[in-house]
Image 1 (tube, rainbow, N blue to C red):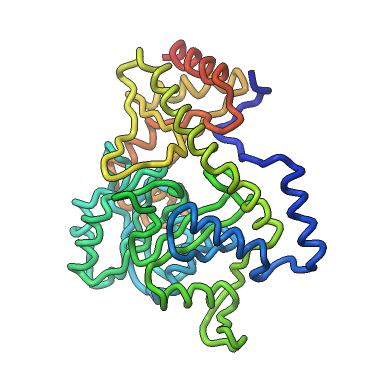
Image 2: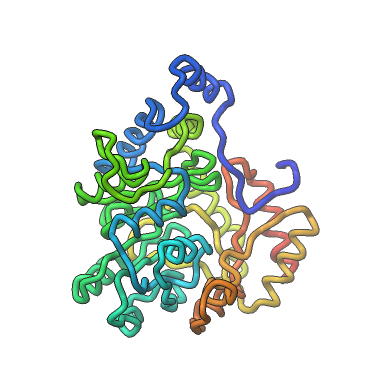
Length: 362
């Protein structure tokens, strides 16, 4: 059994000697950042794994969203989901845009595409859906709405590396998709993120924005930012790429094991995956009411096991940063959902204990 405490997730780390071997090259080259060989290698290996053409790896997932908004030159209202991490909305606000909240589908937990059009005004410039817990959004319906109204689409795919739609990476959809390489993700660089687009001009622009707006001749040609990833972080990404498939398959197996262990509790609800293949990055459970969630959380915490109430409360209720817009489905779900621990280091015996404690608490 794992050592306690057990948290909702734990970063995957490669064998230390494999990481330090890569660090030797940094010492030899003296290049610590700004597009070094390890960053280039990591970008190349990630593209190969995801079967995508090119990617712009940056310092974190939040700055990736900000860069996407900047690259598309958006100013106005951006329709997004309230059922997300605050970074989605923070990035919108930091780029001078206004978030408008669209309620979610209670089964997929993603933005409800049927409710988007009613929120479009003459100030709307884009739609920013989130592939919640790596579950693909209704990308075809969202694309059709955007085309009809002349809007841009930025996908917050922070959770979605490894998820697919029509056998293509989810990063291939929208004008720009952004993702996270944070410590808790399927592939991590400790902190990190990335932008992807199939538009070559946008891709070049994102690369310029990442480095203060410089072009290839080192001329400042637009408003940019320092979005670079260091060689030390890229080294961790390279070392982790070797284990990408193992981490993915491990999470898949454990999600299926959880469902098997909890099969007797037929009142528990799980996120539905309708519009593509998800990446098993989280294991959310929806309970009948908030009282059950609090009981289960308390019982697990007493045994030094710490699940997490993703995403509670919903972002639209953060009155210090946004004007409240009611989204009753998202607000209800957020009170009844709990993500159980899921990581490469989590042992089967731990999962059995978690499920026994959960059952007793109910």
